[in-house]
Image 1: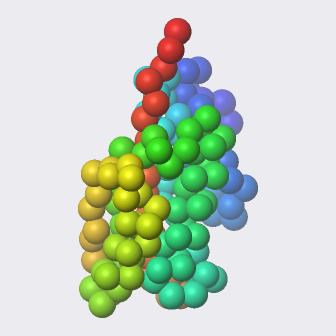
Image 2 (image 1 turned 120 degrees about the vertical axis):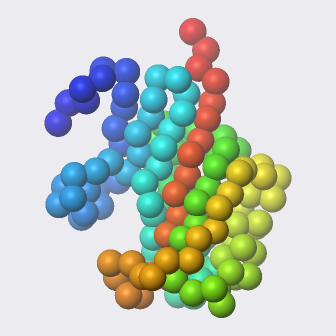
Amino acid sequence: MSSPDPGVRRISSGGPYEDVIGYSRAVALPTGLVLVSGCTAADAGGPYDQTVKAFEVAFKALAEAGMGPEHVVRTRLYLTHARDVDEVGRAHKTLFDAVRPAASMIIVNGFVDPNMVVEVEVEAFKEVTR
């Protein structure tokens, strides 16, 4: 599907839900902003491991847009249990301690897959040079 705006780049990860639901893993705007859809990792173990793996999925999408973790300006972390805040927070600190993006951590009722305990969203920015 072509983008309605030719300056907008839609990045696919090949995930099974992209075609079923109709979304992109990431959308890169001509302004230098990249928005990464929610990323999960139900098969990665506990909250710390799921968080790290979910961010690795996001980082792969950012790499497709020519960016890395150092370009992340905002993260959103959705958790199914308040008891996981420390482990998810520890994983976030491990990945972003030097970057310090704006961040939100929100407790939700659940996810599509009950094995998921965390979902992450990322926004990144890199100045466009012309």
